[in-house]
Amino acid sequence: MPSLTPARTRLIIALVVMVLVASAALTGFSVGALPIFNDKTGRLEPLVVITVVLWALFALSLVLLRRVPARAVIAVVLFGSLAIGAAALAGPPNTSTDSARYAWDGIVQNAGVSPYRYVPADPALASLRPEWLFPAAINGKCPPAPFYPFTEPASGTGTGTSPTSTPPLCTAINRVTVPTIYPPTSELYFAAVRFFAGDTPGFWPLQLAGLVISLGITGILLLALRRRKLDPRWAALWGWSPLAATEAVTNSHVDVLGGLLVLVATLLVTTGRPWRGGIALGAAIAVKLIPVIAAPALLRRNPVAVIVGSIATFGLLYVPYVLSTGVKVIGYLPGYLSEEGYDNGTRFILLSLFAPGTAALVIAALLIALTAVLVWWKCHDPWLGLLIMIGVTLLIVTPRYPWYALLLGPIIAMTGRWEWLTVPLALTSRFLVPSLLLGRLAAAASIITILWLSWRRLQPDARARLTRAHLTRTRLIRTRLIRTRLIRKFGVITRLSPQRRRSGPNIDA
Image (cartoon, rainbow, N blue to C red; front, side):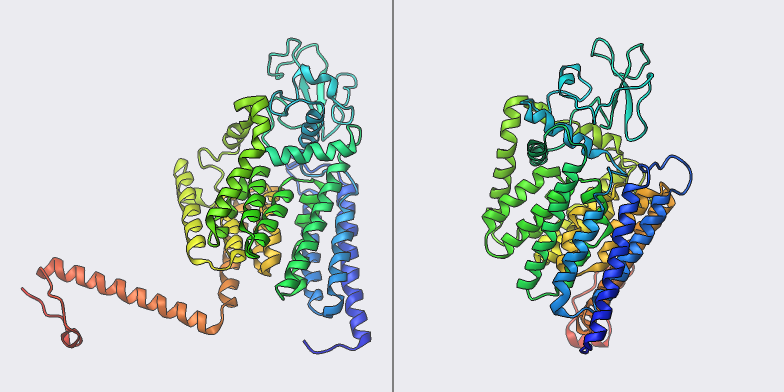
């Protein structure tokens, strides 16, 4: 890049800062001024429009960042990450109340009760319910969203779905009649946040913890990219993204902790510390199980250490909960998979086009297994392997929740493969606009974009090698087809010498 004059440098930096401030202001407005998102209204919600603008500003800021001089990049990246992340603290969660369950699990644990033992609606835990999480009903009605009414049976044995004279139990916790679904690393995290914050504060302690983790990821990315002599601008692919602000901070999804631990595990494995990397990977898997898809990319280097370390860590984290609760530690996981349609294949929006019902589930499992084998066998760069493994899995499974992509975000930044940001963008569009057609189009557009730009990224000689390999395979297949047809028509064909092969086949009639 040609050198810039001091005046032009200041202008470029000022433009980047202006775009970042605009992104932060719009993020704060969407969190603080808009009601919680509701996709059941049948109209285009303001949050959808704001999200489109935020992603456009994100893209513009990345383009401008390319012109920022190297000496100012780290400061600008940190400024943008802090400004946008802090703005995401402006209000309560706006698309999900999962953090209400996080808070409840932490409160229960700090009272000495296993989060797997009782459901939140159980009267046995009534004394632990804070007012901000379980507000009192007024004239038999609950406060507006995000609070849900639940009719608590007098006996404590019913489902709470039939009306009674008992005032409804109002809570921000969704699925109040089922046990928690979260594995032990998540539960320890929830307990730690509530230990320091106490029971009284509302949603903000977990939001603040999400901001700390998100900024920690940005800092680790800057250090890791610098040590690998890569462009520190790539860290902005995470730090400035609407995904990190919305899902890691505002809605404080615990998936960001899994993303941090997978990032740390990969850094440890790639720097010759596989045992520690295995421990970090095991802790990541015990956040939400999904990080297990990172394993194939980390097993090329000392796989025994990584496998043993991760399994031992995963098991040890479960020990205290199993001792106190037994098999109840499984929680609501089976019910959740059934509820989301993964047990019958209806959630695979792309595969269901070609394979209805359980066939989609089988094909998805085979495709993910094939991807894992290819990543382990062919991918020498663990970072690229992680990117492919996690990104392809998300495109196959097509979850309707964008926060699942928090696992992918830091890996996109470490590789600089910005085209994979189309994956969280596709998941976000599917979540905000509940249209099956739009979801399929967004996922298909993501796949096409990734394939096209990945092909463009290849050096000309690499593209030529791939083309030659494709032509060779095509000719080989064509030759085999011709040979098969000749055998069927004339009988056995003798093996040809090179000289006779050039002059044509010798057919023994």
